[in-house]
Amino acid sequence: MRQIAHKLATSLSVEGTRFGDVFDPNSGQIQARVALGDQAVLDAAVAAAQAAQPGWAATNPQRRARVMFNFKALVEKNMDELAHLLSSEHGKVIADARGDIQRGLDVIEFCCGIPHALKGEYTQGAGPGIDVYSMRQPLGIGAGITPFNFPAMIPMWMFGVAVAVGNAFILKPSERDPSVPVRLAELFQEAGGPEGILQVVHGDKEMVDAILDHPAISAVSFVGSSDIAHYVYSRGVAAGKRVQAMGGAKNHGIVMPDADLDQVVNDLSGAAFGSAGERCMALPVVVPVGDKTANALREKLIPAIAALRVGVSTDNDAHYGPVVNAAHKQRVENWIQTGIDEGAELVVDGRGFKLQGHEEGFFIGPSLFDYVKPTMESYKEEIFGPVLQIVRANDFEEALRLPSEHQYGNGVAIFTRNGHAAREFAGRVNVGMVGINVPIPVPVAYHSFGGWKRSAFGDINQHGMEGVRFWTKTKTITQRWPDGSPDGSNAFVIPTMG
Ligand code: NAD
Image 1 (tube, helix red, strand yellow):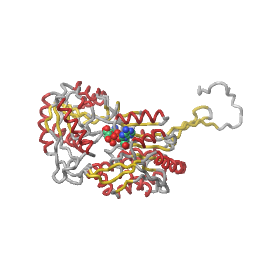
Image 2 (cartoon, helix red, strand yellow):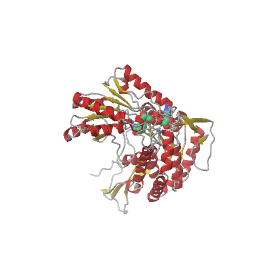
Image 3 (cartoon, protein in one colour):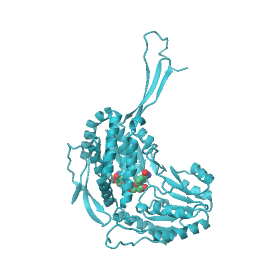
């Protein structure tokens, strides 16, 4: 059976005793074993990072940027292989796997301009003969802990910026689909990244705890489910680290009575069911305003859902593939049962779906609920599967309150032709990322990504200039070059510029 090892600096090799199963979600079979690391593995990675980081930080930013350019070119050259590998462990269709990689590459493109982003601030003559300037310096060693659902994009969100600004980075990817992160680290080294600057350690809670407690790791970026995000945030901060921890989501799409319903249904199909709903920016809740809108929307959604093709992830005609593993399939199906038990109307039932020839694969058909209420557990919690819930609202204010009062605040969308309503909504909604007639408002790489409330702990977003701020610390220098003549200042009084 294929073994997936840690990707440490090449001069190091560490044997482990614990392993995790990596499935092929299309067949339901185990396809590889991944090493689950421990303190010794992390210590080896940290030692290599400590040895390499000062030299990398001292490398001028243009040279570091050239490594990012080379890395981008190598990932593009290997796009096919990476997309197939990603799809075979995650289960998302190939075109979507390419999108996962491309959205990560967008961040690498941003990092190719890192010399510009790292320029500091300067004030000449802040006082008599005094200049003040600031510089952004790397933190040292950073770590990233990533979820299964974007095994290329999210690692690149983190390590792209972290290494471009001069840090060493240790990535602990999801143990469910760990192969692409390892390939990315190999390609980074092939691109000219020094040994020890980007390493991959695999593992579960044991490795995560070792990272959170390691005194030589200065900052941790986490993306995953909210309870674990909160745990990582609390433990990392208690250990004196800088931590950003992105959590789960339950994104709403508000449909105003004037919206173009055909466009909405088209957008919703992809946003709710694409990647089998396993996206933190999926749109699993639709809020039509007024019963007339709700009834018309429901009528159009039913045939659109019936037309969805669920298939193996290599099927070019499939809209979505299997979910990641059997436990997750069971979890999604349990939520569907909970929704029924709570009194919502299950309009389309995706349970029990079998794909001929792949009966053991982790496939779930699309499901649609209507008359979901805000008091229901199946509304309050994240399902993370191909399940769309209709929550009917009477008016704009009620529709605005639903996402604003929900425990999660990652993304939200409004569909309308009314610019005033859209503007009002964007300004008032209590959610971090807003789409106006855009169902999945993931910001482009040079802006930054981050939700609110239980969708993110910590206060700095991923990538863009927020990422640069997260992975650097500011140093501010106040300088003067006296010419030797007495300046009459009183050293016992705090200096003022008055
Ligand atoms: P997860 O929380 O199960 O795992 C995330 C990471 O935490 C993995 O690396 C995993 O090994 C580690 N981990 C798991 N259990 C742990 C424990 N008990 N202690 C310490 N570490 C542990 O998440 P997942 O199932 O891989 O990913 C799906 C979740 O991620 C969803 O909730 C989704 O909304 C969220 N997500 C959020 C964003 C965002 O930007 N807000 C983006 C993508 C995914």
